[in-house]
Amino acid sequence: MFEVLVFVYENYWRGDACPEPQHLGRKLSAAGFESDEIAQALTWLAGLNSATLSTGMIHVPAEIALETAAASPPLAPAADSLRIYSVAEQDHLGADCLGFVSFLEAAGVLPPHMREITLDRAMATGGDPITLDELKIIVLMVYWSFGEEPDALILDELCDDTEGRLAH
Image (tube, rainbow, N blue to C red):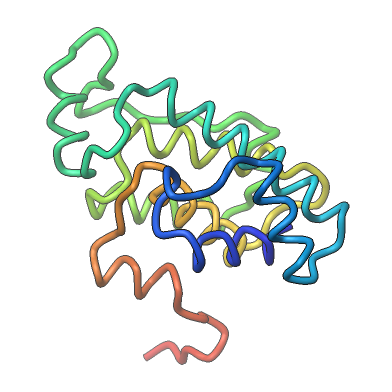
């Protein structure tokens, strides 16, 4: 499924530029993807679209989204609040993925509403625990669904292969 998501990300600049699911399914089939992968990806993308629409913050840059969240106290988390992950989230995401989510939050590039969509979509993958590379694809797709591109340094971090890195 993740190969299909990468294909969609690379070929459609934003979520609203993506064709309707039936047409997209035909394009993906013509590109050589298996029908079960396509079905999984289309279901996953429908959930992403639904989650994005439910925020009411489509096409709002992350910086503005953070300000908007701060301006609506009943819905915005307090500055000193802490996100507690369920056992199921901890098991499915693992320490590396949860650490990466914390890194993005601390860097100020993953506002709370995008974090929650990221976690929701990560949990929607089902099956085996997800890898860090799969989580990075999910984060890219969440940005994509809001019609924005992450900051260049964050984009580099999301697209970088960490296996070849050496710790200093």
